[in-house]
Image (cartoon, rainbow, N blue to C red; front, side, top):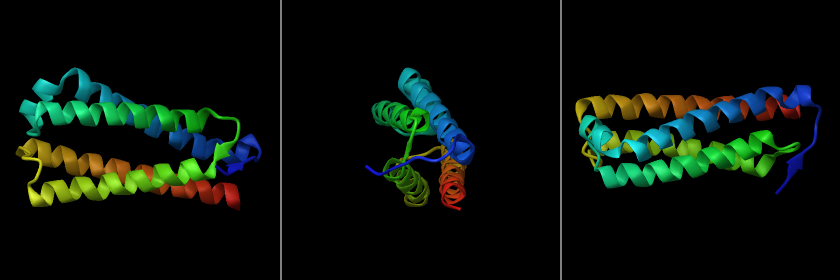
Length: 134
């Protein structure tokens, strides 16, 4: 992996965005994992699917948190986080549009809102990379 060593001031914004992504994602994963059955009733997708998503989100959140905490920010890891955030955003929208996840109305609204938040994280991470390179 390529690491970028720059002053802390130049990486502060990106670190903050990565850390926020890690916290929000990990928290969401924890809720999906710990409360899969009631969340399934509220949102629509099967509890087993939500548990699987919860595990993925916890692992992803931990990985992004490690990227944010390292002394040198890995460009490759940051780009991977951006790519996964974009895929999540598009996948969430596709799941709502196609009906594949059997969302309730509240679930569809939640999925779109979540997609928007994840899309914003991706954009902020791109901005953070640009700040480092400038």
